[in-house]
Length: 543
Image 1 (tube, rainbow, N blue to C red):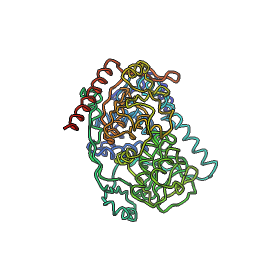
Image 2 (cartoon, rainbow, N blue to C red):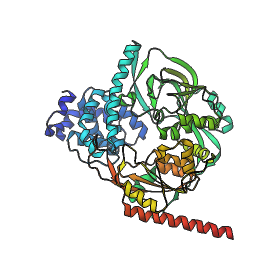
Image 3 (tube, rainbow, N blue to C red):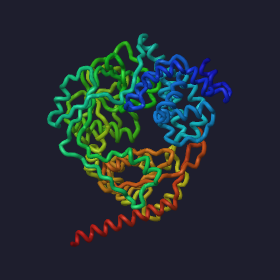
């Protein structure tokens, strides 16, 4: 039975009876039972799942696999979208709010590793559930775009090169050797021959960078946010810069990130791959019959071309690490440096002339050096906070508006802004200002209130101890700015807002609203705490 036929069956027939699926799946389940260990490390189970689905020969086997996971590893089943799969097949289309977007992508990547066409049909079937549960319908269209690009990439290779090779690619989530180097011995890592092994070098910083958890309000975060976010927060001091050494790396013509070969098996590196590119979807990479070879190179993150957040908090920290370590390797970038990246390179005293751009070529790198993001942001944040800033036209209390944003629309933002103006806040749309002006605005601020969005990345220019109050839609709980605030040494708290659009579509983006009464109580507590801190500081100075 084809996948299209399978999905066109009646709802009653979509999910076989438990006895039928157990009997039909028995040979497959016997094989899986022999190999699948729920106690394995997460990255081992992740790679095992990718390998397994790439061997399937029918759509039934894919569903049997998830049925088996339900029996033996319910945590993995849920994390990889098993409940979403069931809802789609049963056509329930009920609101599914628990990390829907992340789990759907994990499910879809696995589905695509089985068969790209089948994944396409499933995505069509999932449209209503996506409307009910996703934080943005834009992501639904992005996945469709990625699927279309996949077919276009294949056609491009066939037309231009005549010859190409398509190989399966597995994610790399662990299994590397770790070696530590004092900062003065970083050249030993660069010069070392690690053979065909993945090596993660931890190059020690001269001084540890301390992270301090500083709540902004004595009321505490929302209980929902607190319980889910605490486990995601890295509160440890930063002591080193991490760099992978990847053998036999291949950077394909389309910007798919970095694939590298270990014992004849291709892997890709998550931090340097855009989630919507072809090989993340299909589990396969396409290599040209011709390529240019490089002995060794430092590779910048290959995500978010033209995206302000990705430039400021991914690519620039990696570029700063290169500068901080005093490396002399060739630098490879997937695309030309953006205006902000060039400005910061100048501030670092770096020349960008020697950065190679491989947007049209294909590279083979015998040894690729790729920085990890774990502690680069805190290092880069300290650099940004040390930069001189000009005077700001705004005061010390600012609200960063998302009025012009295409998604995550705050329905009652007008009401919120009017309230904030009464408390002496300036309303700022960051996209209207040049980089130096944005640096001045946040560098002069003492309290920043903002909905979750790229504009909040500018807290990296604020003075340590600046108050950050983030407003977050409950369906889009991201801990990135919470972590950044702690990296910068800011005082941070947040408030969740309720989703008010029940279903998203192309003409009506998902909207949400903040509880104004709760916000006012929290704001007054924040301002009172700030006044008490200032009063205490004044008394201390007088003594």
